[in-house]
Amino acid sequence: MKDFPIPVVAFGPGSQGGEDADLAYLPMPKAEPLVTPIPPEDAERDELLAAADVIEQLLEAMQRRPVGSDDPPRFSLRAIAPGTLKVLNESLGQGEVSVVVADAPGKPVWQVQETAFAGVWRVQHVDPRGRILDDILEAGDMPVAVRESARQAGGARLDATQLPEGVMNAPALVNEIRHHSRLHRDGQPAHVLNLSLLPLAPADHEALDQQLGEGTVAILSRGFGNCRINSTRVRAVWRVRYTNSMNTLILDTIEIVDIPEAARAAQDDYDDSMERLGDLLAWLREG
Image (cartoon, rainbow, N blue to C red; front, side, top):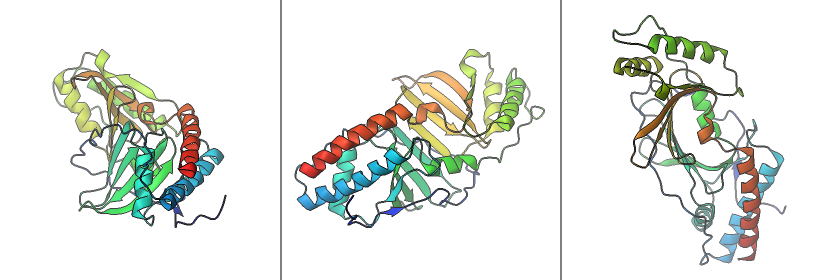
């Protein structure tokens, strides 16, 4: 590959600091419309070629590293010229998964949007005033900032003896969650509790919410219908809720896993994206 003319800064793993999971409330990301990638035909030739260089470097890094790699391809776009950035934005489009990662109130947040190429993400570090501190193009099953924030969970103490009156099945569920969360190791399959199939009283739901607490990660995935995913203050424990087009809850689960599958890009998706990025690269070179 020829020398890269734009100052793109690669990142390694572990580049973010620890997050405080003490959040009062974390809103879901907005349901942004899906945007089909359409490279702009009115762009200048040098902007198309500069965008092609970014895509080429990303594609080569993806080919060297499988999805889920500990060292995923990550490139800062902060120094890229506005015209080139516009070409990239329109060429990559907007996909099905959106994520908000919050620190303690008053600290910066991460806003994540999957592109129309599954497993290729735009990750923006935003301060409390909404100013972009960094703009990252990243490839992988889930961006590093999301994984690192989820790993910081650990502020909740599960105790089935500290539940309010009126609960039915909450004590057994709390004990099951505590057991599997303690045993969970990175990379293990999910242990899923289907709350929709259990006879739970309103007090049970309230007790589970109080015990698990509110985490730092909120994910909206439309790849499996409408799926809203929230981390909790217990490590590797997630609330995963599926709703229909009328926003009616149709499936309510608790998953004990690194990142729920409904939000992650699979290897097949990643492979397909690499093929399509190759087509995009050819178009940008010829445009």
